[in-house]
Length: 168
Image (cartoon, rainbow, N blue to C red; front, side):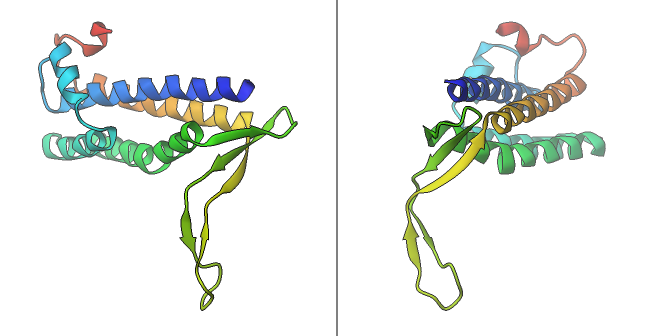
C-alpha cells in the first residue's frame, strides 16, 4: 500500500507537469488564454507537446538564457523523467516482505546479446528493486521540473494577460 500511495503521488505530480507544459506551449505560441486553447493543445500527445515547446522557444525567444533553460528542462523531462514515470506507473509490482523495498516487474520482451559473438536471446521479464524513497525522489524531481516550466510561463507571459492557471 505504501508503494501504491507513492506511485499515486507520482501520477498527481505528473498531471501538474503536463499542465505546466500546456501553459508554456500556449504562452510560446501566443494562443488565446481560454479553455479552447487547453482543449486544442490536449489533442496532441505529451511528447509532441514537448517537441513543440522546444521549437517554439527557439523560434520565438531572443533571450538565450530562457531558450537554454527551457530546452534543457524539456530534454530532461523527455529523456529521463518520462521513461522513469512510465516504468513506475505501468510496470507490475511485487512486495517481497521488506517494508521499504518492492520489486518493479517489467514484462517487455527484448532481444539482447550478452557477449559479442554469442547468440542473441530474448528476455521478457526484469525485476528491479525499488525503494519508497527512490519513488519519492522521482516525485520531488517531477515537482522541481514543473516549477521550472511554471517559471518559464511567468517569465514569458505578457503583462495583463489572463492566465490559463485561473481556468482550473
